[in-house]
Structures are given as C-alpha cells and as structure tokens.
Image (cartoon, rainbow, N blue to C red):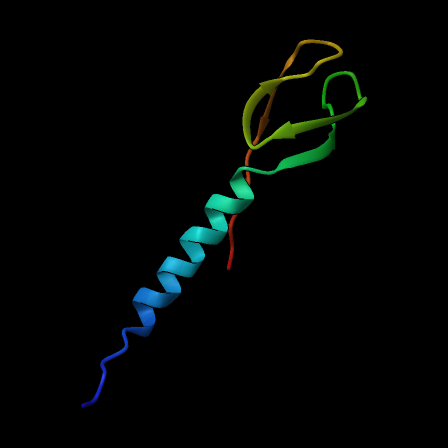
Length: 62
C-alpha cells in the first residue's frame, strides 16, 4: 500500500507552529521612547519605565 504525503500541508503546519512559538516569546529590545533595555512580547505593550506604547511587529519571512 502506497501512502500519499502532502508536502505543502506538512510545510504549512511546520511554519504555522514556528510562527506560534516565536510569537509567544519575550524579546529584549531598546524602548524607542526612553532608550532603556526592556523585554516585551510581540504586539503592543507598554514600556515598564516610561509607560509609552511599544508595538513590536515580527516579520516572518521563511
């Protein structure tokens, strides 16, 4: 019996899992407002020092 493997479906599943995992991480960046080192998640959050909004957008290109 021969199995049919959908490579595109496997690739899509792996890429989606990678995006989900990376999006849940914390990232060490410099606040664009007060220039202090902060650790923030992807998306919108506030700097713990100056309370200004930081919008960290991840650009997935893989």
